[in-house]
Image 1: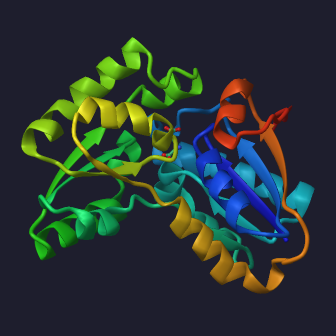
Image 2: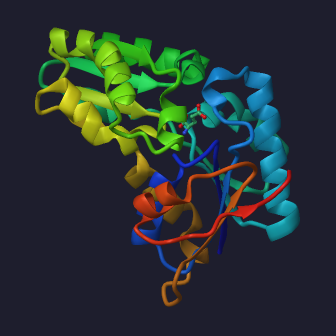
Length: 259
Ligand code: DGL
């Protein structure tokens, strides 16, 4: 079973980690499109073009069986186009876990941290409006421009990152938000810093388990229960290998590619 996984950078490795722990017999091929990162501050058509090129590369070079878009921003901008173009490919996307966050929140005040592009996505806006009305929940949204770059640099708790988080999270803290959706796959990497800045027992909702479950459901018959997983990491630009090791708890040499 060959699984292509991509993100603009390191963030999607938070999903790869969960998949490596829970699946068996999968050859994972990961592309970090660091040359074009961050996606979240780009236009939808550009993100569709990046995602299409990466998917073509996966198909031409590896003949993948399924694709995981390990990026909320690329899912929001491009999953529809990718599903139309690659009709025979299983495509699994990543979306902010708004529904689980709403059912989890006791204070009925939920925060959503995501990239500007994800928060502007039509599907997300529709879901937010529907759910917040249905469950009478206040949703506090915050775009975090610049946070992905800090994480790529490995600055997960540097003074600059903490001060960015402080400015975004203070209104949520004051309003009594008790549950925060991490609507970008990079953000679990600053989960501890978010908790520190919130100064309360806040629940952070990310979706790597849900995605892994979906891979099992859709690819169940192709998964070989007796063989080990493998992982190859490719990057279109520079990548911080210390961060790869920190996320996966194992060393990986990223191979440079041109797409
Ligand atoms: N990790 C990504 C996401 O989930 C991409 C962030 C970015 O490149 O701006 O949205």
